[in-house]
Amino acid sequence: MSSSDTQISAGADPTATVQRAIIYHLIRNPPVHDKLRAELDAARLPFPASYHETRNSSKLPYLEAVIKEGLRIHPPVGMCLERVVPSPGLELPDGRFIPAGTTVGMNPWVVTRDRQVYGPDADVFRPDRWLRRDGERADGFAERLRRMDELNTFVWGGGNRTCLGRFLATTSLYKVTAALVGRYDFALEDPAKEWTVRRHWLVENRDIKVRIVKRASGAFSIPT
Image (tube, rainbow, N blue to C red; front, side, top):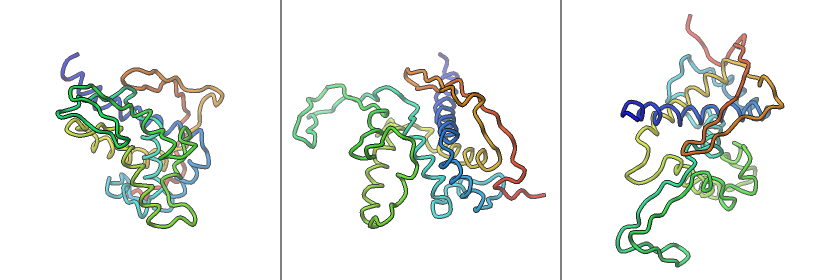
């Protein structure tokens, strides 16, 4: 594979995989879709909206929750991100010791489904888990959110090998999701047919046949 092929596949395919997953899960979960649509309609963003405008967590908290949940439920990488334990070795929190030179790795698809962090429904697409619960203390929510974010960021890798394109990918996910959901209606061509998931280094999702119709009045205020 040439360097240009690597840049295209590494820069485009993972983002497209997560974006397809977000749209697919929104179609499969009408209450979630409707809640996001209502938030976008109320925001009346300009078109095209900037990343700063779509990333406004105080104005669009549910959009942020949907993006985070999309990354959590369908991280693009489906294999262990390996590292070599440096000298003098690594002692785990539970007291176990891993010798220096040992190859270790964590799989994002396993980490982001930790029931101790995300709850017993960790295999379910539920963006509301990223919002403060009724009656939840502010400090309790902050700690719960910190633990979820800590694992969720692992979908981009970690340390000095963190994905170089994560910020560009994140920008795309916010802007494109807001634009698509705000301006178009989506429906699966065949609701009874599930998508196809191809599991290798990238967990690709395919065969998502969707009918798209432009809304008569979208969520954006478009300059004339």
